Picture (cartoon, rainbow, N blue to C red):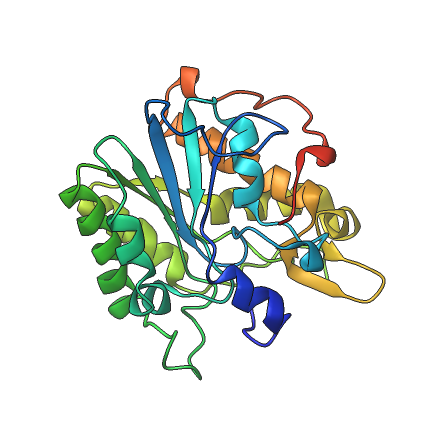
Length: 265
């Protein structure tokens, strides 16, 4: 999640929120003039963000989420590398979403990876105070515009102890988000719990096939295509289970998704 990692790519990503229709291998926006359907906005960090070709095979789960959603539901992926719940707001990115979000839309909020960067005051939030304060701004902003906020705990990193047990890495941030969701009456997608259970099931070696491990890099935070597809499948399944979306809104939850459908900008 470091801001120094692939600086050129990160800087470019910072300027490009991507809106795509959930049409499968094609990821073009709906043609002008067609009645606007509902849109699911993603506010998050690099684990979800759209990537440029220079970053391939690194893949954000937000890039593959449209494959699990019906074409009537578009995805506007505003997630950006290195951002926390605080820095995303301070840079005006939440304002950009709130300027276009409409009644009936959704705002999916996933932060936590970078909120824990205590050495960086531009990103750090304290889990039980300022983290919740910033998350409330997303919740209140969406609700004020007739949209539905949805909280998602941070997807887990790949970390195992000496006994091969998957280890949580996000401290109190997932618990804080769970508590806030209950207090505010917001649907919660517990992606942290689901992903760590998946990594445990897959095990130490098999999980390497889901993260951005290459000949020159061993990245236990960001995903390759299989990992992004697996996490997006968890997100889509939770959107259905939590009744944020209905059965007519989701598809392919049990299907194999070809990696060839994924496109990097």
